[in-house]
Figure 1 (spheres, rainbow, N blue to C red):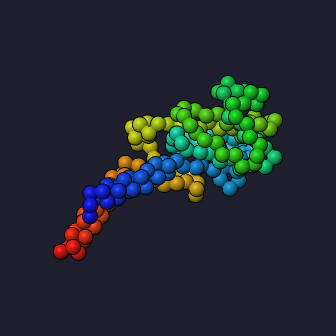
Figure 2 (figure 1 turned 135 degrees about the vertical axis):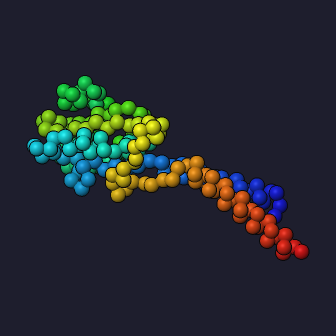
Figure 3 (figure 1 turned 90 degrees about the horizontal axis):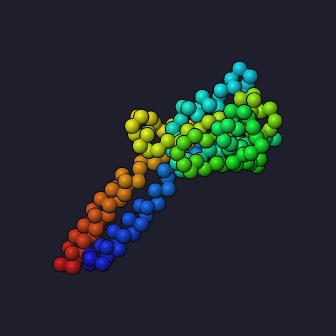
Amino acid sequence: MSTTKQMSLFLMTLFFSLQYSSVFSFEYEIGGKEGWVVPPANDTRIYNDWASENRFQVGDTVRFKYRKDSVMEVSVEDYKKCNSSHPNFFSNTGNTVYHLNHTGPYYFISGVSGHCEKGQRMIIKVISTDQETNSGGKKSAASPSAVLSFGFCKVLLLQLVMSYVASGVFYYESASLSV
C-alpha cells in the first residue's frame, strides 16, 4: 500500500475517532418516572438527596418532566428564600433539558407559588474531572438515557492501534499479491 493510502487511512481513522469526544455527557432525568413534582410532605429532601448521590460534570444535562409546573435556575439567595421573581433561567414547557456548562452549584426551584416551600427544589453540584478522580467518585447511571463512554483518550489510542494494524495488514496483502 502506498504511503498516501496509509496516510489517508490514518487520517480517516483519526477523524472518525473524534466523534467519540461527544459521548462524554450523561443525561439525568429528575424525579424518575414521577418527574419534577412536589415531593411528599415526609420527604422534602428527595431531590437534594438524589442530587448528592450523583456526580455531575460539565457537559451533562438534566431533564425535568412535569405538568402544570415550571423549573427555574436561580441564585443561591433566591434558592434559600424560594424567590422566583429573578430567575437566571425559566421554562414551563413540560419537558425541559438544562445543560450544565460550568463547574460549581446550580440552584433549581419550581416557579409555581408554594411548591419550592414544599420541597420542590434542588442543588446540583457540578465537579471537574480532576475532582472526580481525586475523590474516587463514580458516575451514576442515574437514568436509562445515560450515555456510557470509555474516555476519549482510550478510544483514540484504540483507533490508532487498529489503524496501524490495518495498514500493516493491507500493506502485506498488497505486497504478497504483487509478487
